[in-house]
Figure (cartoon, helix red, strand yellow):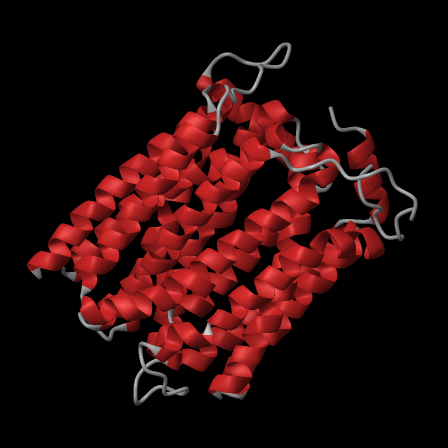
Amino acid sequence: MSASLDTPAVSSRPPRAPLGRPFTAQLVSTGLANLGDGVLGTLAPLVALTLTTSPIQISLLSAATWLPWLLLGLAAGVVVDRVDRRRVQVLALSVRAGVLAGGAALGFAGALSMPLLVALVLVYGATEVFADLGATAIVPDLVPTERLPAANGRVIGVQQVANAFLGAPLAGVLVVFGAGLGFGTSAALAAMAALVLAVGLRGTFRAAAGEGAPSSALGQVREGLLFLARHAVMRPLVLTSSVLNFASTAYFAVFVLWAVGPTSAMGLTPTQFPLVMLGFALGAVAGSLVAEAVVSRFGERTTMLFMLTASVVLMLVPVVWPNGWAVAAAVTVIGVTNTIGNVVAQSLRQRLVPGVLLGRVGGASRTLAYGLMPLGALLGGVVAENAGLPATFYGAVALSLAACAYLALSVRPSDLAKAGALRP
């Protein structure tokens, strides 16, 4: 039984089905891959600070990370729905390991430059498109439908712990020893993640084609786009997520300039910066553990709207009170609210979208949601360069609050009930 929409769930329930060993293998691989992501995500901007202090050039790193979603999202969604979703992840992670190994060689040779760093992040982002779509689409094949909130909570919790709690501080240490060791560590973790899936997750995970499904790639892309455009819940959810991602990328693309350096507002050192951001991982862990219970108690719609809005409002704290301890506390609460909101949104997509369309609908939605992120990063850099960092931060918060208001007005409880009942 899925969680209620806006009312508490019935208290008497059958025993919960276990998440199972196949899901555990997927979760371990996700943890290893995201640990490498956390190292790279923190290491790249810190290395960039040694090469330039231009907000526009720094923002190019965020743009390069997300641009592949705009270019490859639709095609990758078709691939994920046509081939084995486990093999897609293994291949993408293996390619990532090779690319990062090349970055390590450049780092050890002292040959890194901003163009090379941006190019490395761009190729890494391309592997992320395939690996992430494959990982998301395979979860409903590994766990019972009623346990999707729990499974997604574990996934998001592990992602945040690996990225921020472990990966970011590790990057702060590795940067002292040079970029080569940092990129090499990320490469090794990606290779281990691929190995865990190749060995630990057995079976075939290819989506069965639905009756009357188009055979051509273009026809399958069109089918996914039409489903998304016509769905009363998925359409506003994707539009809201896209605006939120656009605004948050603009915010965080230049946040390192607000936080790190003797002339910055917060005055943190490169080693202190990852430690302050640890609060997000701690909050994410807490949020992932309680997400299933919160959704059961308050319903999907109420939980999602409250958590997303709270996350946006808390983004004002670093601007109005740039104190390390205050920012750490705010980031911790953001970790809780953001994780619970993401668990609800991801579980809704997996519950409402037919399994044979998960890759294409995921690719189409993320093409928009993630495709706007490089534009947000560039806009954030341009605004900060010409109007100052606070202008970027305040503008991002205002736009995000408008998106939350749109979602509240667009998705009614009756829409969720009807969408759930009509799921093919």
